Image (cartoon, rainbow, N blue to C red):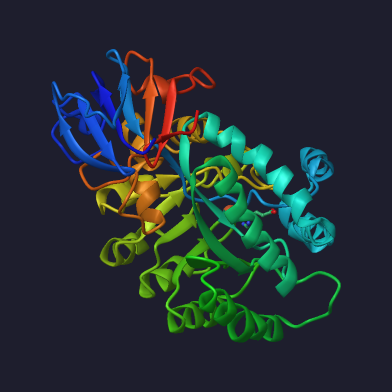
Length: 400
Ligand code: NIG
Ligand code: FE
């Protein structure tokens, strides 16, 4: 049922209020046709409304994982083992492993196989309360496979009853084994893929891996320009392994987000703030790559750049199917406060996707909620694998 009344909750709305987590004095949430229509106390359920008594539990927005690559085939446990012996991610990628190895496996996988594997990964995220997930393409690097990935991404969300945002990441790497120049490949991305993706509404945004082992700043600019011409928002994997000035370029295109940003120059945060671009922190990749360069959290905070946290779920640098673990890592490794981490996986995660309909508990937002039997929301970040929501509601419907 899409009509629901949640009663007797402590509501951590994530609105900007004086109280921690935007806690409201209201205790009840009315959802009609999937949308929050009323916040109050002592509300009574109408005949067509299903009533949920939260009995004093905490209610948070449904969680938002704003950066994943969870549609792919195969796995890269062999590279994991290699890296443990001291071989770097960049070396593995130069030797034809890394992204290329997942591309080869993904090209060979049927839509059904991809769907089944992605479903299992997404299910792990949903169990923790994720009701909105972003999924990128980028392991096809040819038209057929990129489109298959985007199609599967949509089906995964549909199967699970959650909201999905799809991002076209054709500019993830050069296609393996084709001897195509970066220039020609970017032309294909800009002149063939982006127009097709835009025309058929197959993605909401376009992403680029702007990096020494990815695409140059000039190539990234061409992709952003094509996206802009076709009315698609942009975001970027930038300053992950080195500083290529991708963040400043992204800000000049009003990017929704810049992601990773360990090597972001603190002097560049002003451009992000001015553009309203969200910095997406991905501590899973930092952890797996044993990175030591910390993202400039203090500078981002001072400049009031919104910070989001995501899993970056992918087979190479971040095989992490737990958004709450990443929230914990963002605190322990990067120095976020617990509240920043929780806002990072709710309201700021939504902003990184350009969504103004979720991530917050307020009237006119989607009825995307999670209920938690915890003494305080901080428990979710403090303990690793400590809690699961007692209820997950997406668009007013019980997901579980
Ligand atoms: O976000 N940085 C590029 N893309 C992924 C890694 C992809 C892979 O290694 O398969 C990331 O870390
Ligand atoms: Fe990524």
